[in-house]
Structures are given as C-alpha cells and as structure tokens.
Image (spheres, rainbow, N blue to C red):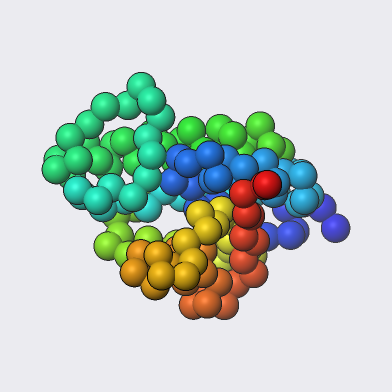
Length: 150
C-alpha cells in the first residue's frame, strides 16, 4: 500500500507551538508522502489563531482576518511539507472552531484529523471548552490528539 492509498490527513492549525508540535509528531508517526490539508479556522474579533509574527491586521476587519488566517494556514502547510506530507492550506470562517474542523474533515473525507490539545480541562475546560475534546467527541473520524511534552 502506498501513502496515497492511506487517505488525506486534516491538520487543525492555529499557529501555536502546540499546533506545530502536532504536525511534527504526525510526521514521525505517519507514513510519509500522504496528502494533507492544513486548516486554520477563523472568526472576526476573537480571531482563533496566532498569525506569523510578520503578519499585522485589524481583528475587526473581516478581510484582513481572513487573509491573516490564509497566511497562517500556508505557514502550517509549509511545515507539513517539511514533515513529509503533500500539503495544501485552507482557511475558513466559522463561529465554532471544532464544528469547522469536523465539517471540513467530512467535506474532504479525511481519514484522520490531527490537532494539538492545549490542555483546557477542569473548570477552564468547562467555560472555555476544548477544541480537541469536542472534535474527538463529535467527529466520526480518527483523531490524533498531540499533547504538550513535559
């Protein structure tokens, strides 16, 4: 079986160190040469991602936030390519991050979703939620959740 037969991987990428770690870990764990899409989900004001340092924008300007999200996803796709994937980038506007990730995974018929867990649990997790937990709970797809190393 070659890498192209294994199905597309969807990386949920928010520009954080943990999202970078998830891409690197998937590169170590998964067959090289697989197709991948690196997704950045965004929304105005709350934004929902960390853009590359050189990208400046007004969080209230939807067109600027969308462009910054596209640049963030492109940065993630570049990292995924360096990790051995045939990656492309995608940025979408969605009010709820986990729903956007699950919807795109379904639209692409992704074989796996890869994302980092920021470790929001307990009371913080109840109020802020956990994107990784919600994706795992609501998606019927295989989900690889990468945790921060000690």
